[in-house]
Length: 444
Ligand SMILES: [Zn+2]
Image 1 (cartoon, rainbow, N blue to C red):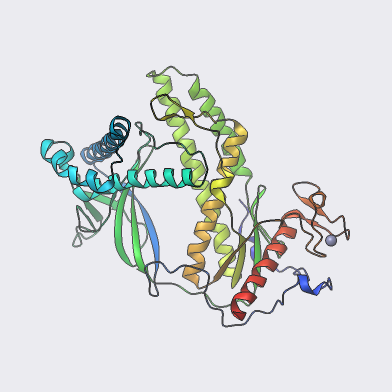
Image 2: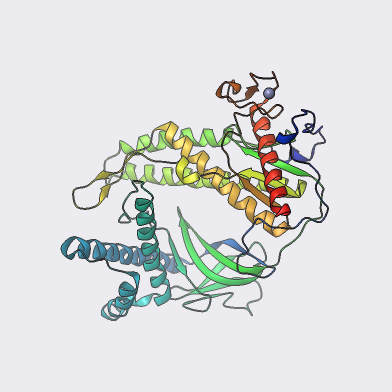
């Protein structure tokens, strides 16, 4: 996981050496750089950020958390069933407003069940279903063939959100406790939080999340003060790749992806093993736990890797240019199979290559998200450019051809003979495109 080598002094590629002037925007970077490319979240100077902490529930509280999750899952499935039936029997589209209005009756009819939990958290779950529907129809409109919103099986519903601190939940609910921090959750009680870092800004939403046998608290905060870093006068283009998470136009490789490939093949083996176990058997239970643990491991590795690479970049550069990745398009799945009842069967797509690819895709997407948060907080400028042809174009002469890319790692221009690491060549093109965009924006 070699990351922190970015700071190594290294000769920058000379972008002005080619003499093809219309292909080369000017490379001067003014000292007073303005953040222009990021949407301001929540307005003002602060940024939005989330904080995740391990929860330390008592045995009784852990049981209540599990029940809370289970009841929200049942609610989600019931609301989905309602929408599907209404549509199938009467051609009626049920909307969020109606389902939310029915919550009152559902709660009144079931005071010891659904009635125990926060009304607002239940609304959040109904909104989650609504969002899944909207996303489905958006994709249909876009001419794609998305999977229909699915019923959530046990273990496929791992998070509940309270949309507002103070409404059915309270962060830091026992402020006078001398040593520990607590969060109060309606129906669960004051749960101890392992608060390993300070929370900044204003807590907006509170969520719980189950990962295997562990519970986490996620606080989403607004108005987190930005922490600008001093200007470095340096700019970089970044190429995200298969062997390395990120490669810069200066020739630095950040975070090797080999450990992810290793985890991917372990995960594939565990999933094959799981597929061979009889439903309801003890061994199957163990296999399920193993798959879940490996998934969690991949997620941790991915986040760790993304944080390290993003940190190295925002420390080193004032302007960072990356390719706009159509991640949704990259992870296109096999076409869903209709189940004959208006829904779709889950499609089997556990081939190792597919799994490996989806892990990489998720890694790139996590990396760019984290990079954008860190860049915003540090006052760095982040520019996304169109990825077309960046890996096929020669960064020295501008010649664009499929044959230029000799292998995963090697680029050799069929026009001028220029040879370079393929990712570095791409990163230089990305940088150039970004600086051109920036020039155009400043001229306008
Ligand atoms: Zn060339």
